[in-house]
Image (tube, rainbow, N blue to C red):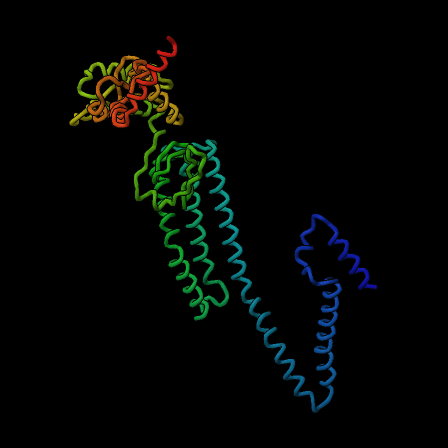
Length: 392
């Protein structure tokens, strides 16, 4: 009867959809509850025999000594465990008290850190982005101090075997977490240096984008192509960090682009055209005003650098594209070419790169030389004369 009820109970459990017990039952075992019941029955019988048989043989003089020896084997470890637990009760109470206060202190520190991050608690000269890292460091110190206090009260802590195991575990942690510790130390330094914050537009280790996560071990950046780049903090602390958002809210970040023009273009005309292109561009600051620098005087050309201010650092690619588009439009409208002087020297002077000045029948010098060598010009002339004769 008990077996039938256990079988029904097992089928009822296995048929339920939301039930975790069915995942703990071996799939190939049938009637697991019946099996457990049979095992429990065997254990009860064995315990009964162990308790009853020695008691029965104790009445016989020949077996009484064996029974006493048997009971001694059983009672010795039981007495050791029982009296050991009684002796451990004061230490256990001490450990529980330490764990209680440790948990309480950690909870209070977490509540303080959350209030600081949510601006519910404002402390002077303590930025809110320090709260999380400071809380974690404080928690590590509290846990370490608690372990130091608890360690002498752990049973067997003074034994050689226990000390050897702890030394072995410490060695494994020390040698296996060298890079992790380096990243943690770098993360602490980065936190208190504050070179960037969550949401800043930065360029780190060649990754250009917005900071979406910062922890003690790594920094995660989302690029403009919607890629997610994870950089260990140890690599960041050893390189340089470019932050475009730090000063963008104050006077704006300076965007700059360069063009190279020949010495035949007057410098005042070049600066005028570049400033005109800047005035036509979007999302730029009127104050401070854009300015132009002549960065170099090379053998064949002069390098001009246009510098503009913008507070929209998150839209830098769009702003650069608009500036370049306006530079092309302004220079083409003024008839000033932006091209390599080597190309100017190679052409015959009749072809220009300005779209409005390009003639439909304009051909480059190289194309004309190829047409002359292949006799294409003669074929074109003969074809045109034939067309004129047919029209007549």
